[in-house]
Image (cartoon, rainbow, N blue to C red; front, side):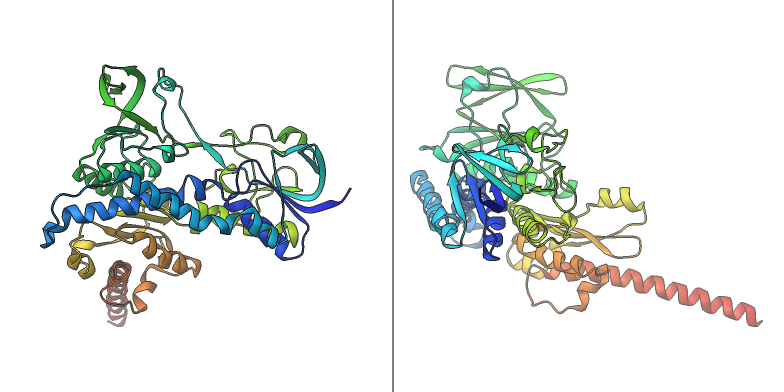
Length: 477
């Protein structure tokens, strides 16, 4: 029986990156995929959602053009054409992730469900394969909470949403995280009456409170009804379609809908993998347990991407795949620094984040953390674009090292990349202003926040110099 150098279970971003990387170095590589290569990002996640968001953004720009003197009349959205753009975007990108391309790169692709039958072997399609190393990259599936009546309402998820053939008249989005707010805003701009229901006190619970406030204001400006601190109780039928019953401060309220989109989280797809036979442990959250090098409790087996639930983003999965190649194929000891991996919520305005929030920094370092904020109301690029609602916040350690940032505004996802580079260089808060930024650009706000830190630091230095001078004068008397 031939031994594979690396067996990869799952053909999403993490698995594709690992498989192509390993095969490119001459390793015998087998990828097992039960559905279609490309994973959630290509088929139901990043690609289709951003394609739909683009249509929604164009529609909104047309509607609001009159504010700047551009009159276009009534705006109508052809939902069928919008979905055709979504499908075309997928079709254009799909060949890059295809089994055919993987084959050309030297990866053997097997269609089926792989199951571990021991610590160094799997079975797929009646075939037993031994391996030196393996990687679990099977992704995650949307969670459907146990709400009475939910199943009868035939809820949509981020997986099934793309099968819609008509625009829902009334759409309720259950869950105010990134997926919920992105898609909720998109459908509102396409013409649906949208209600977003979130159990937490704010939308985007992981983000800075002020960032959530800006996004909430934007959603409401788009006509979306936002209901926070609202717990879904049950789904009931009504004369038209269905209604969601929510508990708000002990009082039950109802929200009617034609379709319900559930976006309350995702769960790792690990069923039937034979993890017990592989001697692979899982966490209390149901994810594969890994160390800093992405090794599982079985040192032959690694895991990455959403199967680990470390940071559920496509670019994180790519970083995981590359790290597994280095460690499994080359025997290195590379680690993934998750605190330097950014993420973006592609609402309008965008919310981009990397590293520690203000609250997280204070929990780690105490109250001496440094927080510097620049407002888009004072950013010339924002003024000229009539988009002054955003801001940037830089977070520094007590000694001034840059440890986190939040950017809210247009193109925040591009701006945050510069912060990641500064953090990788272990820069101080005041370092950014020492680099010349093109004018007028959105990332000038980073320099403005950094300049504030420099001013404060210089003020401290002047105060210290004055105190030292006064002390010397006293000693000389």
